Image 1 (tube, rainbow, N blue to C red):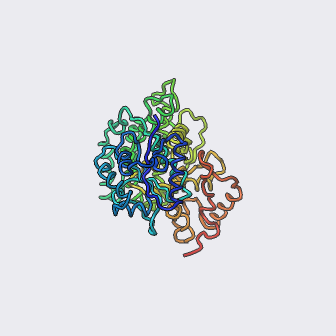
Image 2 (cartoon, rainbow, N blue to C red; image 1 turned 90 degrees about the vertical axis):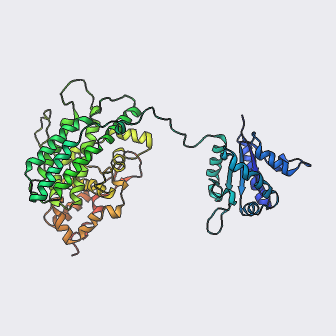
Image 3 (spheres, helix red, strand yellow; image 1 turned 60 degrees about the vertical axis):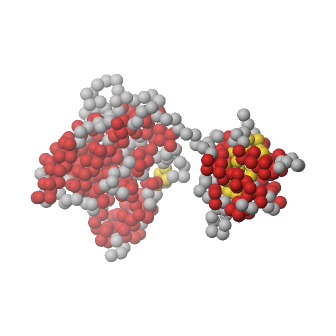
Length: 480
């Protein structure tokens, strides 16, 4: 059945009347049956009765109220035909359950940019036609409203709440207890027996097995929901790991990096079944792969936050003897072995939410309260810079997935402050250099070899700054 609308307006100038007539004609051409006095009111008809009939009729699906300065003033003063319509519309507007029948169409604003709306419509949602250049967008919004075809359809209601809401996967009392023990020992003695740190990482590694994927649906949408629900359910345990790292990096402990480096060396064992069974899919361990990469970024970010630059240096410049019984190559790895392109997560969040970087979006939208967004982005970007400065092999390089989400001025103050001698002397260990000349040479050598910009897999306009753009080689340690 065709939708029928009635247009209420104040006659005003001939230009205004033409605008209303043209709107009516275009709606008619788009299958909307328009009742307008210019072609629907016959000579001899009672104008007031016509108005009342149109407003109250069940056949009228929408009443379009064309609001400009003149209409607003006449409505508020109850003047002329507009005043009569106002007296008819007002009680219907407030008593009729279907209040969406009455749509204010805004044509004018005052000198302060405020909409010209009658008082009785001032709290109503209107469709804005006040900017000529926005006419087509506004017209589409109006037509979609009348035809009941929203630009964003209401999603289907799910059949059950996500598991991270309804299920508590693990008991955290033992990890909480170990963290309290570590904290108390440090407060009391200002030092710590390394055994307490290793006890925590051993327990944490055991609990991680609770977060591999029990089922991996073939359908990407279903798989993506299972994966993201699993990652969200990991957050409480993740917070315990971050508290652990935060506590250790808040103190100057000689051994602090050792248990954490060894923890990350176990990552390859979590990319295959614990029981070494046959017949498994790598997708079953997507969640654990993502978790290790996320935890590494947090670890670096916490070290930077606590200004424990020696710790950050050891985490980023040490070699990792990965625990992989199937790895015949006994050469140690750089930290970049923890970076992976998580195809299933990327494809799911791109398809479902149009996210340029699935992993980056996951990290940023699930931030811990222990760090700000810019602190986590800095940690990720420092990993990128160090990996490019210290390694020529593509496989030893890190891509900063969170980079595009940052406030570049605030997040990268760390890099700009390298122009300070004092700051440079503190952080030079992170970049594995002894002096500014060595650092300058590293940056310029990398600049000379840099070619194409590094881009995200989705979104051709999203790229990452070159390292020489983050760190100005000519101003290293230039100022006091």
